[in-house]
Length: 139
Image 1 (cartoon, helix red, strand yellow):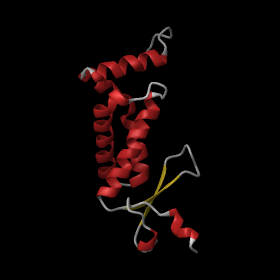
Image 2: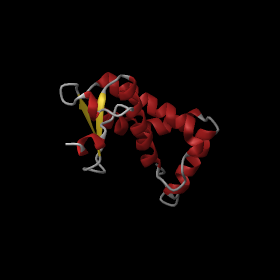
Image 3: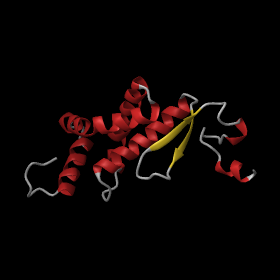
Image 4: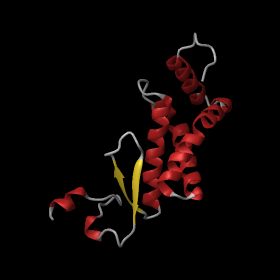
């Protein structure tokens, strides 16, 4: 974050994005130092596993590095990084065949409920390992 109050936060993040696009390692190191603790805490809360959280955060930063050119100008860097984290969590859980339900009732809290097979029958599982909400309409 800029120390000079004259520097606009949006302007600063645009510059940071441009530096990352140019593969500037210092810019990416800054991005990592700025958001790693936040992302790790969120991932740890979802998975309750330090190892899983570390892998998910690594995946989120790899996604950020690869997709910086597609970052929308109108969303903050923090929001964009959390968006990358959410994609990384979903991808990771799906790759491990871990069933989950993403809950949005407490938004903006990040809430994934991990499920085991005794909690839900296979008829409720959608193709992407999420809960099929339409299955509940049958009851």
